[in-house]
Image 1 (cartoon, helix red, strand yellow):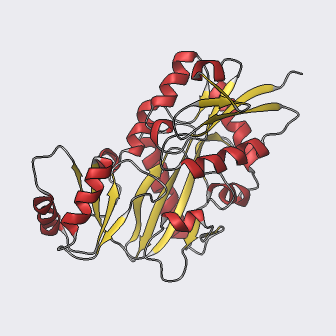
Image 2 (tube, rainbow, N blue to C red):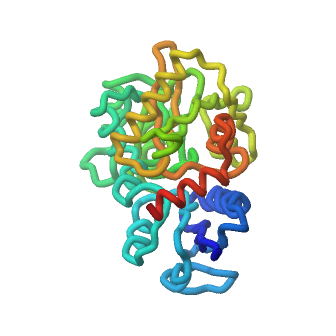
Length: 322
């Protein structure tokens, strides 16, 4: 029987290039060779597509694949650009639609949608570079709503890239200015304290329309105030699953992850990140393209229910080809 040709898109021009390379490598290693021919479609930092080390046009790179797995984190891989390109070319791909993927990447729009769905999130405000306010006026607007310390995030970045802590009101305008100048948009949120958790969602899995994986407890290095990019890069994070959350906490985390997936209109899978404080879960963000490399949370969540990365990818491919 002929093997299915699977194009694995990895690399790219976003700040998450290194993480994308690792997720793509994990995908290629996990696909059973007897059933799938994994084709490494590498996109370099300059946006040039390669197949077997040879630069070529994007159209040619995907011309002989049956289905695509998108391992591109951030940027064009998540803002809908690559999804629209694959759809125009008639190539089925695993994941969410271009629109829902772009929504989940945009933290300002995501906050509005999720809060409207009744989900508890940190108090926060979003700003863009085109707003007719000085950063001092923005900072004062935030201060009127809630006090420091503040977590300031780029509007459309993942893997904790570009996050800054403003410990007081005096430094907030400069932090905002830096992030707005670099990224064009920023979200200022209250810095919450509590246990960190993450929850995966898989569509049409094991007889459930939305199967929610058991929550993983995210354990940060001693003294860390939040999950930083360096923690991911250097493998300093532990994911405990089964976790030590109580039964009611686990159910609440899973229920919120399911509601968030639906509210954003996400597709085959997603991953929701939380802080659990004394009042319960607080949703931080939702990722339409979960990291799948060794050391990320999604693989051990799959393993905790007797599945595997390979099994998950085969399921995702079947959904894509539907």
